[in-house]
Length: 312
Image: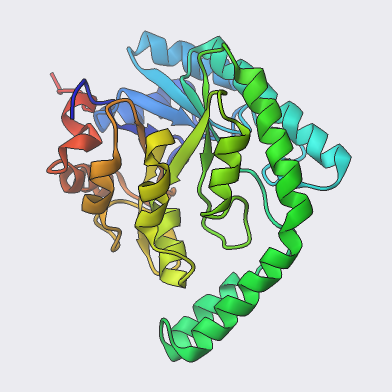
């Protein structure tokens, strides 16, 4: 691999908001991080304050998880909503995220496109696996039934999502901000493995690419909907960033080393400019993060040596 590897960062999903920018960044810096992702829980003023303090600490917000500034009411899934009012409000919230990224100097934003409009049967699939075994007849029947229901319902939602991501790509054109459409962890969400091809072709020539989530791919693999590596085999050439966390059956956002995600499989698909971010839940401890960095360190492309500050 040629070039300087993008240093690994830590998402504020782990410790924000609620604390002052100084305390939040101090916790990141104590663990050695100098780069972070701002999760979707900051107002515009709070995000500006975080960015100002980060610069004073010689740290950098490299990416925003949209919608950030946080939108009210929540607009996470509305980019695929067939309700015109919801769809429009979601587009506006994500345009505001692009504008905020430009203002604070972030390189990219992470985007969820929404869902297919069906009620989730994912919990029932997990329960069936626990009772009868993974890839048992009972598991596969329920998986196939749930997937067919999704496929029958997805059409209008996918069309809206494609129109909206194209509009966001046009808004980001020339801004220096890349949009990373994230692979999701629920089978009923958009885009599926195949639908990513539609997203990328719809946005050809625009700063829109693929954002891989290691935990989400592992979960969908466990549920039997795909092979985790298929995402990367097909879309790594358009990769913008990667969320790095571990999984244990249905539980994700664990620190690497706490579950069974194959990080060695991920490593060859990372490029020098791929934005690498640990995205962890609040229950993960600081010592578990330190151990996670030890787990990733031998896989040199994760940018550990480049990203971690040396204590003085």
